[in-house]
Length: 513
Image (cartoon, rainbow, N blue to C red):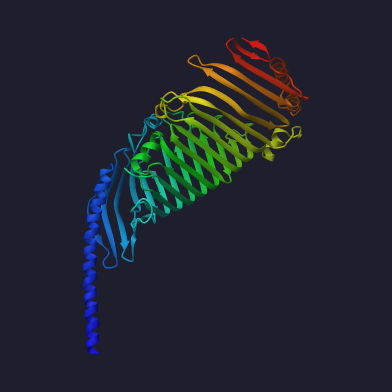
């Protein structure tokens, strides 16, 4: 029995010695691997500066601790400064690397020239302070799937907040995210990083921004936006930081898609004049609030083209002007709203597809606004609808980043076609169809458009009966209808046919000088 005890004791001692040797051997191997990974990232265009480093965790894990790290993306100028991070691999789970990020860190981004024009107080760089709770990243080291080791990662945080690291002149903002979880995957590709896909979810997101442009008479703009049950998905042809940064920083040619879905959206926009600028409120002062149910937004960049689309349900938009007697006060609702567009995003290419789509259903004022507009209930109160779709071709004359705030998009239209035009409200209906081509470089239109109105004259009479049009306005509208429309096939139907040719414009076969 004593021999067996001594044997087990010897085996335990030997096992402990071997385990220690294995741990220290593994530590040296991990240290070599870390150096190789840092060299690989530097070769890929990422500048890395590391202060003190150490590996602990004996005997059941490897915990690599790095102090005073700085990551700089040479392509975009993005710089991240971290006081320290700890990356841990448990011996029981050697295929997963867990990196715990500090509760406070700084990210520095380059400021586009157009933004510096709007906010002169901004410099060439903007430092963002990031504070968090429970922020950690898990990386797959096994690499069993496509893309190899490090191709799949996930992120989580109880709370994440982003705000300017120092006070900015004329601009303040803060982003708060709660219940953050996400994943990032990259597929293998010859010659570099392959296509990547990311997905982030959050229980709640909130953005607060205050803008006070320079000048004693400038209005202060305050904006708040909150989203619940958020899912953000992104995909790109290349997943390396340099390619993604170059793509989204200036929407340069590439392939990427971004989709945002939220279970509910609330927002508010408030404009206020400074006391020294006006004795009372200005006409522009007031508050706009927005509430919506499910919201979905998509952005797609493919080659020289960019497409956007947003769709929401149960939308409510309320305007509360600062002046109590402002007639615009009230709330408008829609059961569904969809807006989409296609346009070129790269200058210097030939004609590219352009499209604008607007669909709205269940359009109606809230009861309080209806009763104030039409207290005698003279107007029909059935919800209205809008369906407009126009497509064609266009050419971007210069890059988007050269367009200053307030300037129109330098888009030269080649041709337009009215695919759908269907608007119904207040008992009246409007429909249109047609095609127009614009000759270059003189930009003269060629083609024809037909507009049909049903119930328009009856609507004019009802608006007059409700006190919304006076007698002179009714007479003016009747004169315009007589000059520019003709009777249609049905009762109370008006038709306008516009033809654009080399001699000018004709409306219902009458030449317009």
